[in-house]
Length: 261
Image (cartoon, rainbow, N blue to C red; front, top):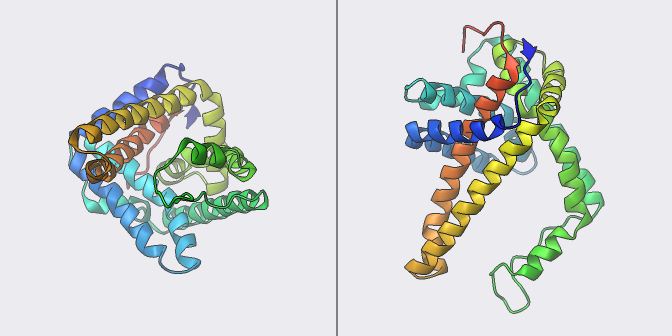
C-alpha cells in the first residue's frame, strides 16, 4: 500500500463518480443508507449505551456503503448483507473494526465534551411568537456560539483520521491505530482534492435546496415541501456516501486486497 497524490480537480471527479454510481442502483444504495439510519435510530432509544453503540457502528457502516458502491460500480445489485461487510472478514477483521468503532465513539464524545465546555446547547426550534420557522436571527445566533465552532474545529481532524480508516483496516489489514495515521496523512496530502470535493457536495446540496424551495412554492408552500424534503435528503446523503469509496481508491495504491472483499 502506497500513498497516492492526486490533483485538486480530482475532488470534483469523486463527486461525479459518486452521483453516477448512485444512479446505477438508486433504490439499493438509498435502501442501505436508510437501513443504517433506522438501526441508529432504534439503538439511540436505549439510554447512553445505545448512543455509544450507534456511534461505534459508524465505521462499519461506512465500510458497508463503500462495498455497496463497488458492487454498484461493477453493475451488481448490492444486497442488504453488504451493509455488514465489516463483520464478514473473519475474527481478526471483526475485532479490528470493533476497535476502530470504539475509537470513533470515544473521539466523537470527546468532541461533544469540549463543545459542552464552551456552552453548546441546542438552538431553539420555536421562537417567542411560537413559530417553528427558521429565521435569519436564529441562524446567526446558532453560528455565534463558541461551542459550535470548537466542536467543528475538533471534528475536522477526527473526520480526516477516520475517512479512509475503515477501508484500510478491512481491505488492507492495517491496524486501527495505524489506519488513523495513514488516513489523516492521505487527507492532508490530498487536501486540495478534499477541499474541492467538499465544496462540490456543498454546491450540490445548496442547488437541490434552492430547487426544492422553488418546487415547494409552486406546490403550495411548506406543507408540500415537507413531503419531498426527507426523501430528497435521503437520496443526497446516499449519493454522498457512494462517493467516499472513490476518494479512498484514488488516495492509495493498493498492493494487495483481502480475498474476503
